Length: 160
Length: 294
Image (cartoon, rainbow over all chains, first blue to last red):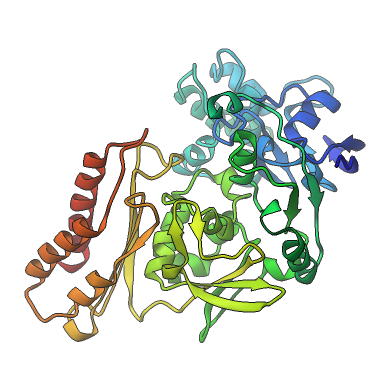
C-alpha cells in the first residue's frame, strides 16, 4: 500500500532530496521535513492562503498540492527572501506600514507582495487587491497591507 | 461522522500514479474504475479526500500527459481546451477574453488568482457542483465534452452531462480529455453575473447570458445558463425558443422571467435561503435581459 517516494526540490535556492508518502501535502513536507515554519497550516482547504508559497514562479497554496506532485519544482518561501539576515524592501514596508498584527498570515502576504513587485511592477490597486484576496488576515484590516505593498514598490523603485 | 472527519489534517492513504500517456491513463481507469480518482489541480480532490467524501485507493495525476495540455483555436471547431489546462491559463488568454467574454468573466470571478493557477476547467466541470462558475458560460456557448475510455471516444453536449449533485453521465472507466467550445455567434455579447458576498466565495446564484441578432426575432439568440439554482447547472432551451417569437420585447422579457422561475429549484443552505435565491434569480434575470435587449 505505502509507496514512499523520493522527490527533488529546489527550495530557496538549495537542492533538496526528500522521502515522502503519497498522501503528504507539500505544506507538511515544507514544515515538518524541511523546517520552513513560515509556511502556515490554516484552513487546509485553499481558502485562507497562509500556506502560500511561490512554486515555479507562481503563487501557490501548498495545502492543496501533494508533495509528490511538486517533484522537480522550484520553491520560494519567506526564508528565501532575505540575504544575510537583512530584511528586504517588502519586509521593511510591512514594518513601516504596520501591515501585520498577530503575524500568522504575514509570511504569505510578504510573499504575495514580493511576487507582485517582481512580476507586476505596474499593478493597479485593483490588481493588487485581487492578488491579496488569496490570503485572509483576521486582525490588521487590509488597508495597511495594501499600503505596505505600495510602499514596498516605492522603496524598491527608489533603490534601483 | 462527517463532523469528526472534518478536523483531520492528514489525508488518508492512497497510491500515487502519474501516467505519461493517455492510453496508460485509460488502462488504469479500465482496471480501477471508481477506485481511481483523477488529480489535475487537486483543489477539489484534496478537500474531498480530507473530509472523507472521496476515498480513492489510487490517485492518478494527469499532468504528465501531453495531449491533455492542448489549448488551441480553429475557426471550424472553436476553442479546444485540454483537461489539464488551468483556469489561470485561460484567464490570461487574449482569445478567451475577447471571443468568449462570458467565460472570461466567470473565470476571473472564480476563487482567487493563486487557486486558478492550479484549478482546471475540466476539473470544475467533472466535480459536478451545482455552483461551478465556469459551467453556465460553457452552457450558453454550447460546449461539448470529449470523453475517452479504452472502448473509444465520444462527445457529449455539456447540456446533457449533469444528472444530479456531483453526478454526471460519465462511466467509471471514462475521463474527460477535452472541452470543445464552438465559435460564438457572430456579434454576440453578454456576461456572467455572480451574486456573491466576496468573489472567492461560491456563487449564491450565478447567471450567464449571451445575446446575438437582437433586433431580428427569427434569428435572435438569447441564451441563459444558471449556477446554484438547482441540483445541476441549468440551461434553458425554452428561453431561447421564446425569444424567437415576434412580440414586443418587454412582453417577452416578462414571459421569460416566468419561465425561468418555473424551471429553477433552489435550496436553502449556509450561503442563502431558497427565497433569497428565487429573489435573485428573478431580479438578476430581469436586469440582464433589460440591459442587453431593452
